[in-house]
Length: 203
Image (cartoon, rainbow, N blue to C red; front, side, top):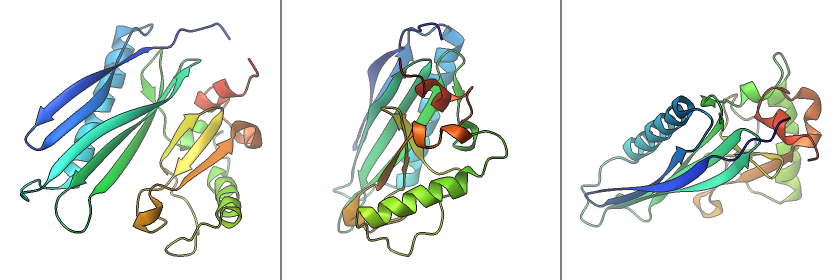
């Protein structure tokens, strides 16, 4: 595979009443149209997180948005957006949304698109997550049964990282439960043309 330079990720700040947001802004890709497609998706995701947090009318309410870059290589960009808000009650809540793109086109990938059509990726991932829950002594709110077909994920360090929102699997104190799965453990069902396929070569 021909070498492709990483895209440039800069921080764009947005401020409004009781809220400070830091968002990634993409530039320097092989296509300005692809860069715009990625930036539009990031803005849409950030807005959904803001809207999901509800009103900031409470006197002590506040909102903070930030992000983490997970992968920026081999034509793959994977990042996570976070939004913390306190809107009253005992504590605030952090939401996370992760986005994975093909840098050269701006296409965003769902979890299903990472795998070969027809592969039972849900059952395969369920088995591996269930093992980790037991080995790591994680205490779910209810016994773990299955991920959603569109479960949250990102790609980092040659691994697919499946995660759950706060309260989705475990109590608040556990935060976001993350389950890293090596690409080599699922290589037989990976879509070789997708982002995980770019992570398997040892180069």
